[in-house]
Length: 124
Image (cartoon, rainbow, N blue to C red; front, side, top):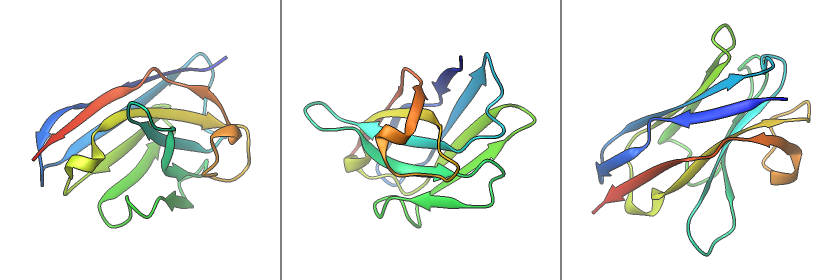
C-alpha cells in the first residue's frame, strides 16, 4: 500500500507561483512513475504532468507546458510541481498519484494510488 499526501496549495493572484509537494509513505515509490492531475467541480479529473521513476522523462499537458515543472526526489520519496504564471483557469483540486505502468502516462486508469488533493485557487 502507498499513502500519498499533497501539500502546498493555496490562494494566489494571477501571475503568481505555487509549489506543490507530494509525500509518499507506506511503500517506496522510487521505482514507479508519478503524476499530477487536477479536477474542478462538475468536470472530469484531468492530467497535468507525469514523471518517470528516475526523473529522466517528463510528460506535460498542453496547458502546463512552459509554466509548470514536475520533479521528484527519490531519496525523500517525494514529488513536486512548480507552477509559475498561474491563471484563474488553473484553479482546481490537485492530486498526486502513483502509476503501475513503466512510463509516465497521461491516463487516469494507469494510476492506482491517489492522494486526497490540495486546493489551488488563482484569483484574477
